[in-house]
Image (spheres, rainbow, N blue to C red):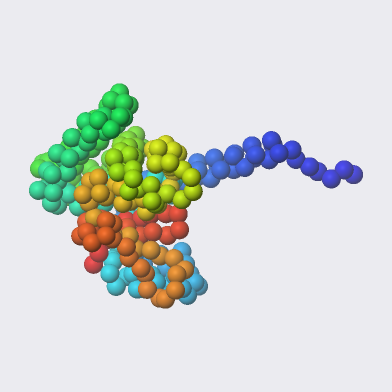
Length: 262
């Protein structure tokens, strides 16, 4: 009997289909942004793993809750946006400053060469989301918080926010290309990196994305790295360096979630 062989074309199609099936299952079972959960829920994921268990224990001294985001490659931008808007709901003066910056951001991107017609819908939706979570809206903090959570679990609104933050990040990389070129490995130019790794949806984020976005919006982020690094403590990095964090994220290889300090 002839051994079974599969041509490369069919094999590639099978892999692509398996990937689509996994993505479909994730989208059907995992919300874009979860409810607030006790940080101790991480223990169940790493049961029997002494390194991670010790690090979660260390993390729990500083943080009480976690909010999960869907692992779809957009997790950094979605977590950043949700966490920052959540902070702004309770800080009216910072909210007003951010709203003004957001209003002016479209014109700045146009000046950098982004086509106005490409930006129009994304910017309009971005501003609508900001308006819907204004601290001045009727109903008080809890009502606005509920609205934020509702918005970020509506795929259309949630993804438009992610797209616009990707464009802001890309614009900052272009604006300060000489500086950011130093962060790019290999022969990629800033322009190629922006078009390949920043602007497309579902592309994962690295330090360069975080620094550029934080700098563009004037928002400090602290990222806690939960990995197999040495020692029983979790290492934290602030972006930009020396800034006061308003957003707290946890990074596990390939994924970001939101943290809530004690």
